[in-house]
Length: 185
Image: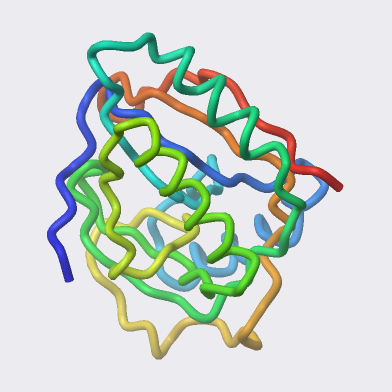
């Protein structure tokens, strides 16, 4: 697996986030996980699909607009969890417990298109995709024993990706939303 550099101020993140109507069952699972392991709920449930450093020769908003326009042609698709995973996240300066996201044909097509669009624009994507995608669940103080996790039936539908969010890293736990693309229904 390739080492992915820690996010830095100025980096742009491309995220999938559940719509408000998809959040209640996710929040319920987060609360179960928090009761079991401690820690705190990740307020902004999301899957980071890609991160990149904006090119110096172009305005960030121009790059985001081009991505928004192209990605809006994609249909909404399900985000499926295949299990739980944990790791130390240097950017968050904590351990995290996350759902591992299944690399379904729809998700794979979206990721390949996103990476292709970035590369066409002369932008080097940060994520090589030899590391599994994850969806935030809870932040932890210390690692946990996953065998004590509540029992969920996997694969499990987490949410339907209907919107792509573009966010700029400003600092630790500080982000600026640059825009979004609504996926076609």
